[in-house]
Length: 381
Image 1 (cartoon, one colour):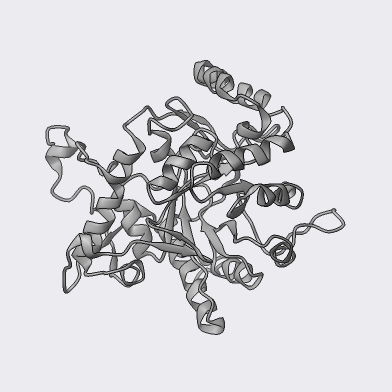
Image 2 (cartoon, one colour; image 1 turned 60 degrees about the vertical axis):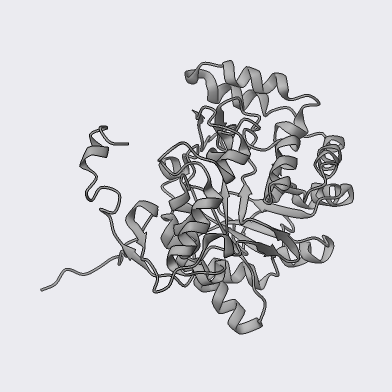
């Protein structure tokens, strides 16, 4: 007699579990179009910098925009709590690791100052670039109008897990369809990992969706809460929802794979899995322009009762331009991310990101170790 099943488990795959199969034709990398569009806001490259305090400052956002992408400023973070956050960044970097979380909890008890919201937005706009800002759902209705009035172009509404239906004790929570009517700017919502939730969020009229729960290098949600889906599977499932919604309505809503990407290969795999863009945190925290002084920490690290992130030492690798465009002198794929995407697209014969999404992907858990014995021993280049 077969055993009865309580739950049926299916395999799920992350970046290290899969590989991209070469295409039937190849194209010159410089001929590829890697631009993306979020409801009329065009990005020359499909790279977004995560709304993490150690990654994005107004000056970093200006530089990222000048390089063709967009950086998202955390309006719930240090930049809007402190008139001059540089001293706080220095103290965070100098705090011993065993006291880092406690110290972060302390510095984040300072209240958000609404007058700093508009000031930070204007600092970014003074750089002549697209301004993107992020808020947690609880603060969105109050703070988003201030940011929009100051000139923000994109509003991100982010929490660890976001759904279209939320049960709470509040008389009237955040309803995205109503927010769309009140905020006349594109609204990007996240994070999620499933077909059904992605479809429901799109039906609420959002402009783009962030995909990923817990994969970031500084995030500990998977350890603390047990929640998460590996990024390739999450992206494939949510891309299916995007395409189904487009088939039904004719409206294309981009999805952005957020977190867990370390190398150019990961970026390429995210696009093949169905992403229209990628959001990176720690790789950009390693740039000279990042404010974190060689550190990064998760957005939920300062939570007062249940921290779901940690401060990590990431070091400084090079300029933001070098990380995005090279030239690279490293062989690990962590620099010249734009070049890696273009070359990979050339090898699968994709002229644009939509064609790249159609490339073949295979399950290949040994792809990084097959034939690499000398590299694994540390004897190769």
